[in-house]
Image (cartoon, rainbow, N blue to C red; front, side):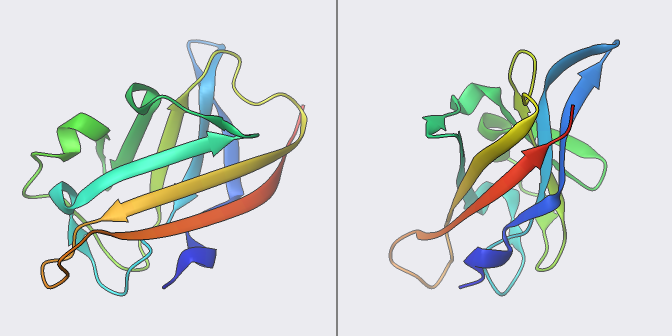
Length: 130
């Protein structure tokens, strides 16, 4: 429904810890017209330049709380509200190399009144700086 707004391309940046680049992160919006509890976000699949990022390398931050995708499955209090920009972090050695990349995000959401999960998918060309 709101697929083209999912990836916030102007927020993509390398993730540094202890002076070392350990991955990259970007802002993401929910592809649904309402907020959902995190346990209803069944999957966040990230693909970079055609390569699917392993699920265990993806982290999700909403508010001031960081979750692995497995932790989100049983998170019943935190919510991702419509319009809220959450942070998707990807643990990837050396992060993004300088230049142009294709970033894809697929969200699989469980909505209470739908008999099947809904999917949102966004693809953006992003440019990483040196």
